[in-house]
Length: 130
Image (cartoon, rainbow, N blue to C red):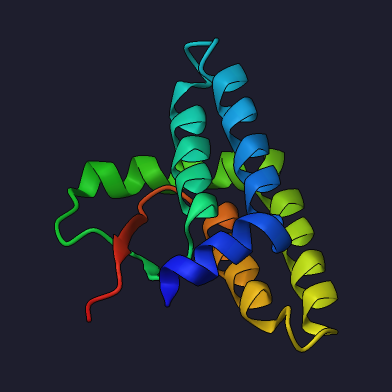
């Protein structure tokens, strides 16, 4: 079922366009040394944007204190520079899709992407256990 939903997501939910946008931005960010961690996060979100059904966002099982502090600092920078605007665009798309009955599952996926777009550092994407 998730395969069918992922295919429909790519065509009708805007998944292909969003993944392409995240990938292009990730490539541009990786051209600078300072932007590499942010580019990696863009690639992570692009991967989820290609197939969000059957995936969940969570915290890693083991995380060091240094990694948590660094991730928090990067999340602050990310949120101030780009995360808030990306979050708002996903929420706007989700609201627009909620207006149609067919778009409701896609709206929930945009909300999942919005959470990751707001604070991507210190999060991992993993399959939902069956």
